[in-house]
Image 1 (cartoon, helix red, strand yellow):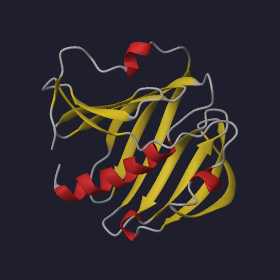
Image 2: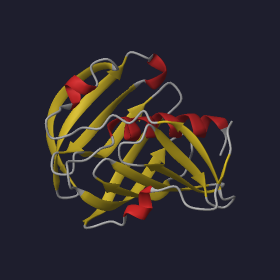
Image 3: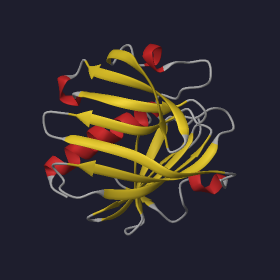
Length: 191
């Protein structure tokens, strides 16, 4: 994956991690598709959500990249399963619980405007448009499911690219806590 694609992916995933979170007790898995004009091809993966815990497994041109955010943790882990290595980075996740709203939570990031509601994958979603104060992040539209309290679709426009993240085949059900823990036998690395 070249630098431009990595930058676009980072901007799109920034929104996912910034908005990730779920209502108490919500547990689900979903398939994830990231479409990027600059990358030229879709990337696919899976997401696992349990309360505030998140796991994403993304198929990239260099192999699977897994990100784990344990519930309530101050750090998140980016795993390279093929090399059995991980990187630890500060957790910038902004979770939304049932008492919070996106407009208030994102107010310091830029201008957030609620645009209405739409249904994505059978889930009613509030639609928000965000124009970031940091011009490098551009702007985006986010469809947040009230039931799951998670973004089911994200559309971003930056100076480098236009990208969409879509979650589909959503399956609610109990998930094993081990999905959200750092696996044994991995070695830490840093960049």
